[in-house]
Length: 308
Image (cartoon, rainbow, N blue to C red; front, side, top):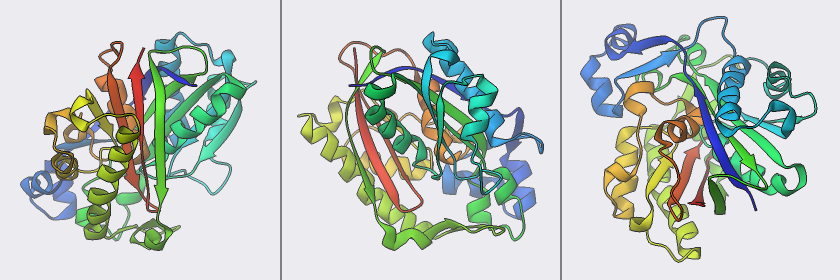
């Protein structure tokens, strides 16, 4: 059994609104909003790294959870935008937090990385005790390089989110999760070294709008629940229109899906935990909350947690 103790986030200071982005891409600001629901995004400083953002979000999660870095047994860091082939950011995050006793592992996944890392944490918790899950992305340096594709570059921003998972106590218990992969579609959303992001938007939306509702229903059905009984859905913030379609498919109101994409854009793997930190109104006993994500691979999943 594993529990969620608290969340953290970090967002760079620089705000890039649609007026600035549209000028860079040669489109109209309103076009960006209509296509994505995004009005602004955050860009990191040129010298700001994925590991630094991850450590900042992780520190806030630790402080909000009342856990010292010295208590951690494991640090999992998800990112699809690490600055180098190896090592990944996890070992540097361990160093920046001063958690010398913790094993640090990378989860090199875009978009769905935070969810897959939470699932790994649930499986590791009984063995190592307290785990810090962090997801951090610096997408600006990738999408702002030539050649820029307007429909892709407009989406992304930078940031980090984090969660402390504990085998003994917390504010919400992980009840169940389910993950999925379809490697036959791996080429539809990819980032080659030294190249721009390639995204077949039509294929991504088609698969996401089918697979995410299905995996959410699978997890809820095993728990004997209907979507209407979920207090809030905390999803990867890919696109406002996509969130609306998934809500419609599940037959629930759109406002059950927490959304901050208008302010931050798509921060890839970081977005789900940033959303969780902002929604964090406190888990009342019995509250049902669903985490869900879809991303490159294609990989997707859903996790049900319950307030204790």
